[in-house]
Length: 283
Image 1 (tube, rainbow, N blue to C red):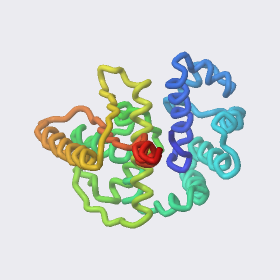
Image 2: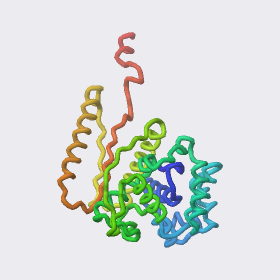
Image 3: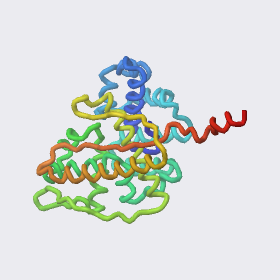
Image 4: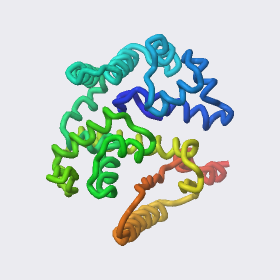
């Protein structure tokens, strides 16, 4: 589940809430969410797809629904205000206020490198511009990216990419795409990467509801391993990653960006419960 410290558009939090409820209760609907927010079904759809903003009367209802209190509640209100304002100066001021309220480690993400590492849509904007032949017409890009991002998020992504020299404006109006070596290190980088990975896991979960099964592949496997097997599985995963990279390099004209998420983690460990065999011997 997304954390409010990891977003810049408040509607991402509402979308994540809806998807979580839909997974837990398949009959959950826009109408049911609308009843909690004081909105019509069509309004809920537009809010979640970033075509509409929460009216002022719905903001406290949303905070109650999301259980946002204290610092988190204040941060949510600031993000709502920042998304609604038309003044760029006021928007910048509000986002600075929001940044000052974020988790201490997240406040350190003030460099463009760390922004690139911590926000899922920035790398996606870059690869979409590349696949689109360097064209970056905002209205067209917004239609290509899923789940939907806001115009503010797109503008932020293009600014960050330009300042990192990952895209360079050309006289034709297009962008040239380039590579860059990042130098950020330490706790801030670790925090940024963890935030990015958490967002990717949330997007994968969202896709179960929002993406047609024919356009995604999600599966899981529960296995019993020992230390040697665990190491082998890690090595096999790395080899699979290399094979994927080799295969995609052969694509002459990519048309679609896909996100791979690899996850291997423990769910039980009998060594932590004491030895049953030794207990029988003592008897």
